[in-house]
Image (cartoon, rainbow, N blue to C red; front, side):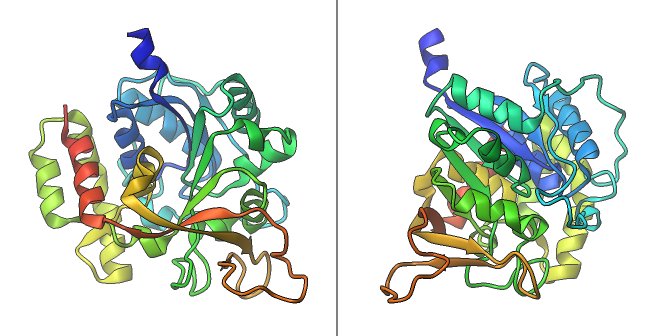
Length: 324
């Protein structure tokens, strides 16, 4: 048994729960080849304090209060940017306006950045960080300990729009827009980074039929999700005129568990940190050799998702969420 446990993929989920964060966390906890060794929290869908409360609550719902939660940053890395909180997408409580009772658990004393650094040092090369919110905690970990980029296994980022319109404005996707300076630090850090943008996650859709399947499941996690989905559904209908929801966070969790479900390209990614296109992600695909020195010159490359088998990924997510 100990040998089987040691072969599991170790994950730390950096999260701002969030309805689709809840789905992603449950997918990870229901995946037999994954060991979630911690949650770190960040602002985004809600403020950081509420993100921590929601993370503790979701672990209680899942019966996994053994997993530590480390609270992350309450401000952007420059401390100068007003936070954009997407409570209009997920509800003022982040979980569909259900106003669940306060969890019994408490976060650990360590900050998210310290927890990330120490766990990566403890298990060099073995940990995948799944970053579902703004990248402040990851950037702080890089600044705190430069060896973090070598000790961490992979960083899977939900972020960017890569040649499609953003979801905050035409230029930017929400996670990158919320702290573009941190995103640029992470993308140019030299760590093994895989970025999954909304150009790909918009291909993974949770349909009305999926919702009916969820409602028919006897899995208590599925029944819990049914309670919180209305707000998220209504937002998607109003914003995109679709009857369904995009599975951003769960799709990225599947990318962490099985990257072969996606196709990838590789290049240097830089982030616009100010102005009308703040949060814009630009991938240099290296198809042209520029004569001039640019802001992309000699920077480390990352992998960026290009396509996904959306039907297969959606089915795998549903299988995880409906299995008792």
